[in-house]
Image (cartoon, rainbow, N blue to C red; front, side):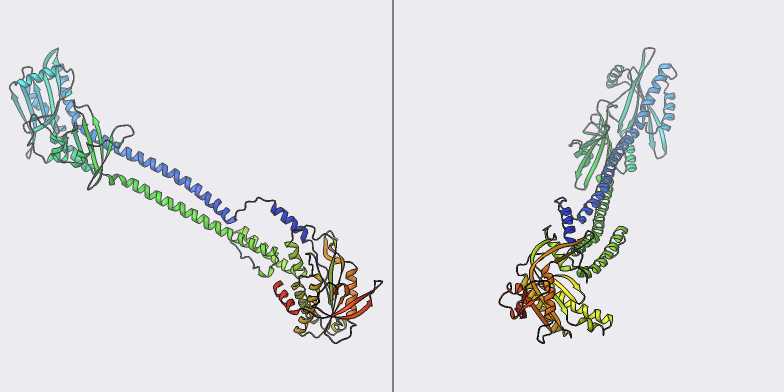
Length: 624
């Protein structure tokens, strides 16, 4: 076989320099992909989730705030739907009296007039005229099973009425009276003084009842699924569904309204002892959370000051769970979104791991290639990812090519060059080495009787034995020359015992050929001397080899080995230079001095017949 092309030392050093020039901190591609893909997914999905959650929280908060404001405003509007007719009737009569269109002393007209107005505003319960002398005319809207009816009464002056008239004259516009109790009912009323041409005509008073207001509140509570109420100040109740079932017992002119304590509504009672927990965005209502044994309640209230000296607290309360459903749905949505985000990140991490796996495997296999363990490398499987599949195809083709090259390249030598850090290792240099030649005796005439395939099979089996023994002792197989093999020891890595290694190899070849039962004879020559070793050749084809007189001398010794007497199947001749460097454990027979072609003097030769075979076998096993 021709000499191997060896320029791996230079390329290995270049690769090592490129590798060492990189950043000291290394990160696995699986971690990089996981951080990149997972991080981008987490960042993008997390940003969307954060923005959407913030928007949902804000929208939900605004929606609940708006809903609460609408409920409070709706209750106010419905309360005003009771108070507005009272004000409008009183003002309308005052204007008509001032213009002379209505005569406040015409009681029949007033009765008919009130009857017509009450038909469209059934919550109006009474119309009263207090004349300047203190007498009263009252027409009352009475509802009974037979239908609505109107009763008119005239009452003589009373001391309290005259004092009331003096207060009325001090006002120049409509005002709301304190609730008063009369004829078993508590009235909510408004009064306006009537003048014509500067003459006081009397006071016009229009009223409704607490019962009517409580009925309206009860209807609103059913509409909103809540309990409505109107408080007069902070201790009395103006309207509440419970008032529909309470009688007037305990009420009188001095106490026209039920107290909050008498109402026995624990939610309202506790609400009055707390400060508001929140307010509407425009300050239109206050919110309270009241904790009771039956659960938490949300109380919404709005305070109005248009109806007298005492403020009206208009409100409603309902279970907090009715309001927290929105937040529950929002939290459920947030949990689902968070779960999807987590699933996306996990999927991204799994994808990153899946993508990194073939890259990681190709890296591991590439490391095996760098160590020339081609027999331990498996083909990369195909991938659904186009680039990774292309990488696998290219890698597998490269592996096939390297396995072919391995047949022609000295693996041990290349492995030694790959593992060294000395850039000058392959540079030509002169050093003392030991060279070995091994040749088959009479191969040329024997091969003429063999088929080409049989000849190739015999040589392949023969060289396999030689190569295994040479590698076991750390030798470098330089070349095959027909049926001969040339090897040397002491380079590329320094071996102080190169002569002993070569002799042990020769003995191992002898023993291995005997064990294999070959039918041909072999002659082996070993010689030690100075040689030039390194890369020799052209720029595009370089051989790592040895040249010098020592090689030529060894070749001549190998020729002489065939002429030695004896019937050994394998004959081994070593030079005096080699014999001086090996230990006494080797068995040698002095064959004398022989002239060697190309040298002026003779070379003393020794026949190698035995040596440290046990140590040889142990070293071979360790090296293998």
